[in-house]
Length: 111
Length: 116
Image 1 (cartoon, rainbow over the protein chains, first blue to last red):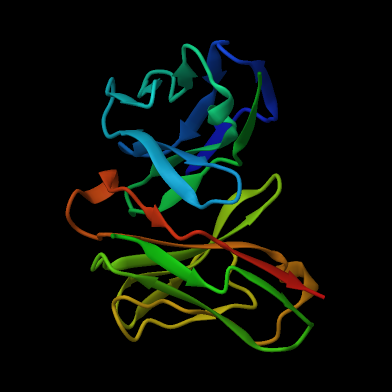
Image 2 (image 1 turned 60 degrees about the vertical axis):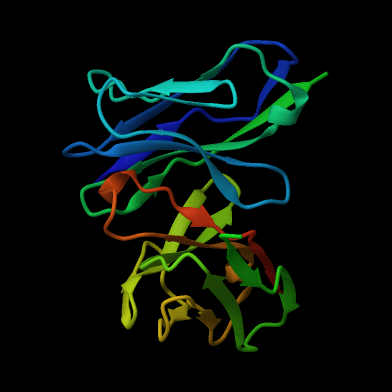
């Protein structure tokens, strides 16, 4: 079945460091891909998305490119801030319109 | 303001005492869903509903019931809660048709349930 695999956390970085959180997927057809973020004590909210191959989603300085050849959707940010500390979820929407979730990656940014 | 609301936000109960967690959305979305979030397991779907009076099981439906009598409401019912249902629960909604697979899903703030 369809699945999403993302790197285990926690990921701990210093402020202004470069961030990469890896996400790979398995799916038939052409899924849409998402990154959601969960700040402490809150629900999930959409961070960015891409709906077809080679699309780049971006928001709040974060970027991710839909790579069909490597079935990946890695999340990147050039300079992280303490306020970026959160749990990040990679997800795909498959041909049945179901959202398949990764396990989440906790990001900790130290000042 | 467009939102998904859940109540209660926090609940501590005892084994076997029936409870209901309410979920309501004001965006006229057809699709609604319940998830549970547990450490290391990510989000697991419990039940979902494509429209009024249409519900289907997700990945972990055992021990839960849902109903969809109105478009805006999608309550989650635990008839006889057990300690393994201690978890963080999220309700979510999205439009079913327009935009297809690219649609954003909107989440409620979560309900933290503890079953003793």
